[in-house]
Image 1 (cartoon, rainbow, N blue to C red):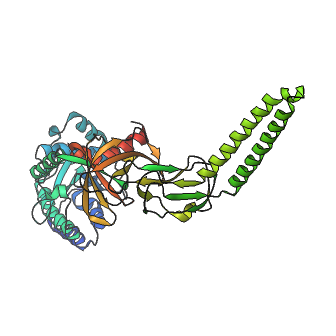
Image 2 (tube, one colour; image 1 turned 120 degrees about the vertical axis):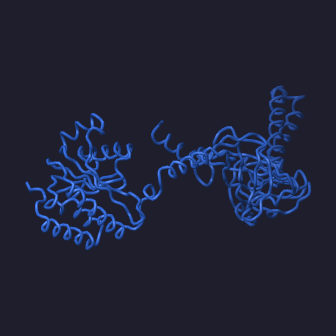
Image 3 (spheres, helix red, strand yellow; image 1 turned 30 degrees about the horizontal axis):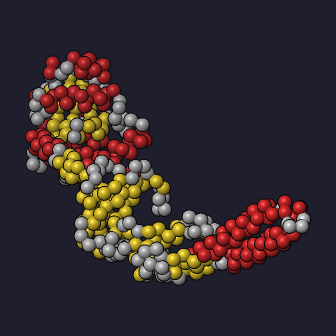
Length: 438
């Protein structure tokens, strides 16, 4: 164990050497190592701990500081207790009586009885850290004076290597408390909730044109967004098979009628022919029904408009030559002056929305202007959408003249007011709950 300082000239030479080493350090890591190790010869301390912003950055004889080590926890807790009492502003021996009972027990088990606190300040005099030095012997007045001067040199060297201090060290406690209070009040500021969702202008009250039969579409006569009148031809199905079936049914009916006529003429002389009349009459009715059904299918091969409007569908070439099933949607006949907004709200972005909620539509071709609308209907359950995932279908009505049917954009839906903190943390909290099951 090294002896305390006992020679003024030697002590002064050692002090100058320590200052020189501190000023020659080219990184905070080397400076921290010098602070906790190089002064042992002069001050005979057993161990030293460097604290920056309340956290231990370096220890005597330790290359890597373990944040959860018992000794590190003891040093940090002791400094917090002394700071609350205002005992860290000036270099002084640590009075163990000022520490809590548990901290005194830890000091006896982990450190030494004689501890000295050496504060470190920047060029403006702001405290940003300090050195905890511990040994068996009490600290003399001469040693304390040398330590105070050495602390000034260490603080100057640290500030030169790391000129910007942490925010909590640059700001006084009162200013930090005011900033935290202002942030808390800001998080309580009521803010109107909103959510964005893809939207499309669709017909309102349009007539859906569905496939009347199973078959192959031969031709789509109209074009997308073409104006049509009631009775205009829209779609023509391939009628080759239907014509053949109608012709066969017609001939089968003629055969059945001829057979019934022949048996009717023989019925006066032949009892067997008379007995078959009812059967043959029923067969004629069956063939007539088959003929009528074949004609009806042939008539359905041409689909006509049932009202005036605009043909709303994507592409005529898409349907040409395509086999379809009965009831499959082909197009829609809609009034171009009557349109509504269909919104697909992703299930992950759902928030509480009331009927009549305000909606702003930003069309893709007019991203700088918005069209006002109000929510009319909200889907009961989420459905799969072509873009992938689940979404709720919402319908909104325009307050002004509706844009052209088929235009797409982004709808912004407005909900009730909520604190800013809830608005910012709503989605992270939802994701956390879904992940952790809270």
